[in-house]
Amino acid sequence: MPPHCDSLDGPVVSAARRALEAGDADLVLPFVPEDAEAEVRSVFDRVVSVRGSGREVRDLADRHFFETVVRLHRAGEGAPYTGLKPEGAPTGPVIPLAELAVESGDAEQVVAFLTRELTWEVEGRLAEVRRLAGEKDRSVASARAWVEAMLGFEVYCHSVHTTLHAAVHSEAAAHSEAAASARHHG
Image 1 (cartoon, rainbow, N blue to C red):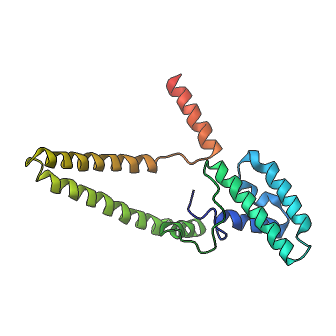
Image 2: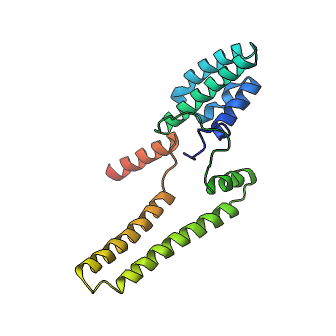
Image 3: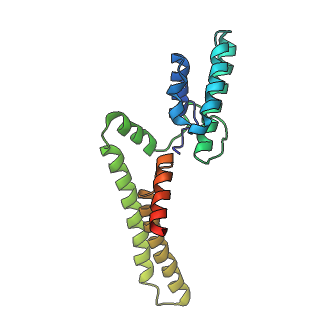
């Protein structure tokens, strides 16, 4: 989950705000699992029914709705709900670039950033392996340090590759993975 799905200016709360403003719960339902739809609709209906009772009541009711939707969103991802984060909470450098790519349809900036990050990591790790290779014949401890760095480099590369090809956590991906597993093991 992007690090700001649980923030007041993140995509889940933004969708919840749009739903309340439009009086249409369907606008937030894509952010929660299908089995949470009834709970979202129930809370939405209760919140909408009291929003006209004054600013304080509206603010409390809206906050309750935001918390409910984010909690259900997090549960759908298998992650704990730890409360709403404030607007402007740090998201790291890649989330704003990814959001820009979604808005513009142009991935160039996010690809360039990730490429620089990956290059820096891989080259740095390999440089350490090469440095230790020159010392590995000095002692068993030196050889162990080289083996640890070498295997760490290989595991890191494998981990990045696995992450790049990881399935999106969605019902469609889960069905696809189950079907592939059944074909492979069947």
